[in-house]
Image (spheres, rainbow, N blue to C red):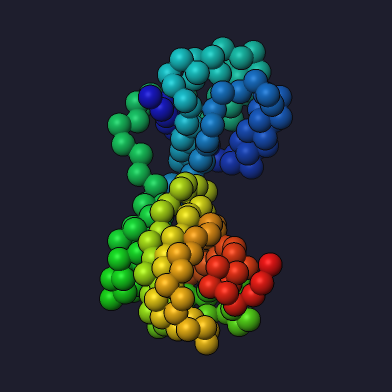
Length: 231
């Protein structure tokens, strides 16, 4: 079970505290067991600093605390604080990566099933789309809607999401595509051939919506399979 330690302190020496944390990261390189750390400052009280540190487990957190470097840094940290810091130990009961879940729902519930009336739920009005298949970028929700409608008219297809990774406002989805060529595609008459390829889409989120996307997929494989080009 993932474990999170919440550390709160009061200090007017935030810059010194940041330098101290940089020193700890450098001194414990290759030895620390923390996997993720976020430091925030209270907007209503600039001296109130909160750090959230994630560990794979409580046991790994204890290993981290027992490092001699951690003990030394902690003593220096206390000296920078206006009052003793407080620690709250939390077992993680639920961890939702909202941007990642939104990207998965977009593929599985909207694009694959053709429920394009919901695109506004996922894309910002000024969405900017980059696609290896297009000479010019697509702009706006209506633009991406036309793109998807074109593919759905030409192919009876489905997406299979193979994996998804989230890092802050960035989400990368690796997927497989399987379809049958049933309609005109770029001037190519339907062949009824099965078509398959793989790709990766990276999305950038802002305020819960996708503002930019990059589609990298095997365009040549599709063109070969519908007979547009020869190997």
